[in-house]
Image 1: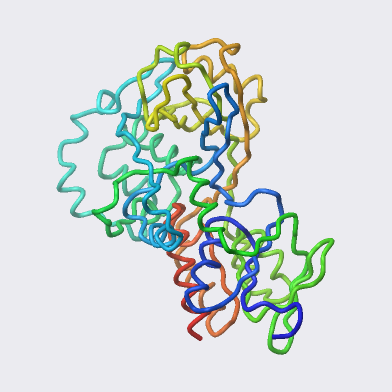
Image 2: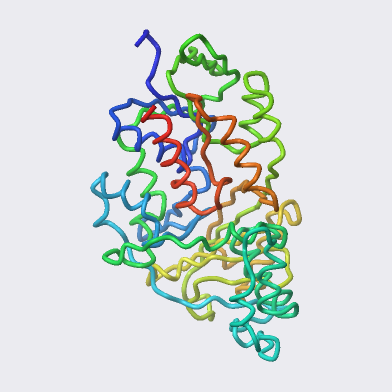
Length: 398
């Protein structure tokens, strides 16, 4: 290997990039991970509020993992962290209708539910949008007033035009592992574990990728160029399109067709005695300025509670968001002890997405270039790691 060259260069330090870099170690490959910003973990972002009792975490991005997340569990097992999982209590979600919270079943029209089972058997996800598939099963009113808002909450954006098959993809469970869990300091505990032993350079935006005879030359803003035998882009599709525009223009055009959505996430810390609200997993907004509010209640604390509201982008400023949060939680804005915000970007998948991914994979066939992220089969942490595992095997076995 020439000086400055690496076996595998990964651009992007989200769960997809970090996971693939760790997976490559199974094949004896050394990786270098470049991250444009200061934060590693991508959409996994556990904020720590400083309190008199010590740090108190709340999620600004992804918030739940399950025992069906086999690739994640394998990575944690390899890091010796499987015994550090923290079980999450099973708590209810509530639906916000106007200014009142209701149980989800109470808002369903049960007349529309008649015949759900027969419709479930005859409808198919493949080729259907979320609206057509789920609305056709549960009924148009139930979809519009209950299930539609709930699915919007799942993907933190309007979900009706998503491919139905991108949601709730069934995966095998590891029954010896607790069903729903987090880490000791939130999900970022898992990022820290997976990042352990990897060489990661933050504040290292890539400006240009060039293909040499037998490797890649990657130019980094403010740093030395890096040579790599294999290259992974673990970034959003629009970012990948920009980096590949000259190198692989046809692939870049396919990537540029994938839309992205933005979400303004605001976490707030409140003293427990200021809230009359029952313990909740979260709140789903039927029609409001936010999609959902995720609670820290499933990992309870005696003194504090935290809620992360996922707001529609550019609708409210921070004062407006605090006012909305106070209204929903039944508190005064002054009761918010601390807050933290983060703008997340997520893929906005559309019908025809899987055909496009097929074309993308055709472009990658036989290449020492890989793509991974939460915009292939689905948006979950495990969907991302499934893609990373597939791409790692393709790169490392060839």
